[in-house]
Length: 251
Image (tube, rainbow, N blue to C red; front, side, top):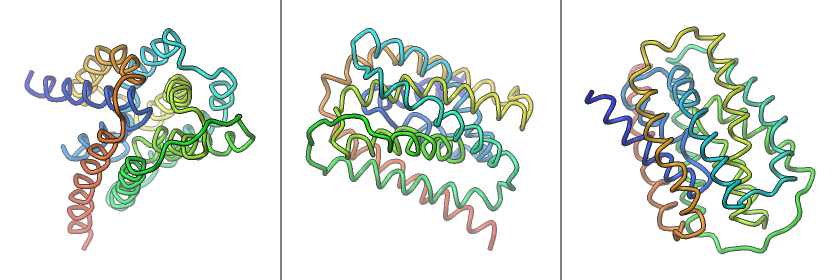
């Protein structure tokens, strides 16, 4: 029960961050799972299995409050799914001893990207371009391999490229459901059963599902920059610790 409550709280916090900022659910969950010594592939698989439910509720919630740009939403799905499947397959076939430091470095970079967003000026919105397709592919690939990264890669790039913030967050969150389902199916066939991780997964699901509708509403109400700075710092600090521990094992 104690483990369930811990991950229930993690699920709530991670989904509030993700639904409000359009990023960091997977990164946050994977960071805490890896801190609990869950291997990188299993941490990513667990986070994405839980995220199936949270992204579904989050996507529906964003549709209800009209946070969706339909053209952007449709453009993200197919390349995101392809990248996610490739990333999940690659991660499932790499020794965690050597991939763990790489994932830590990746998540530290994600933390820096999120922190950087806290200091960037708001920009004007612009139309959707062809660059969305390769961006979605890279977002799906990094999301699967890093246990998160769809939001930090896709949302950050689109917002930094002058796309409307609210509709970008909503569209990226809604498209993430399809990417997450594809990644989870790939992880299931590559890794097998997640039965030994069900308590953390159920905690993440319960917390995330409860928080998702509130997070979609707060997307247009909460000042995001202070929250971006806080989240970026937490992700960086935890993964610097994990990187040091992983390098100590190798050397």
